[in-house]
Image (cartoon, rainbow, N blue to C red):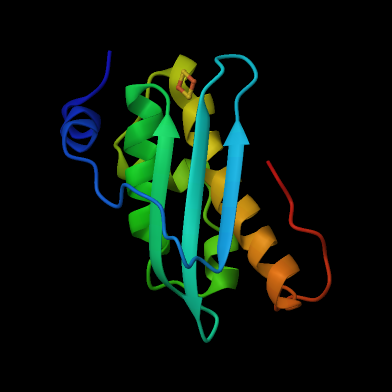
Length: 135
Ligand code: FES
């Protein structure tokens, strides 16, 4: 069902774990499948310096968690807010249609972690005080 790239990343995921002294943490779940994803971020001078995930879910959820956390490290918070599940799926060279929702979980977990960072730090997104949009 999965392509080789997804299977390779699932077999050897990066950035697993939890950052205890995080600056933002987001936990989201998918009601349909019951899977849960949590992403914690370390942020310095508005740049994400570390990201880790804990995911209880399928191979697609694990692979997208690994890719999404890897992608946001080094991004500014505002750049990370623009990361879409489509970009993660593109990096993975595709997911089966019934597994696209798993990649949405990764996008939502990053947005939730950034939202938590904004709440805790009192900072706001660079493009004004718009609310963070979920897809
Ligand atoms: Fe639930 Fe993949 S089936 S996250």
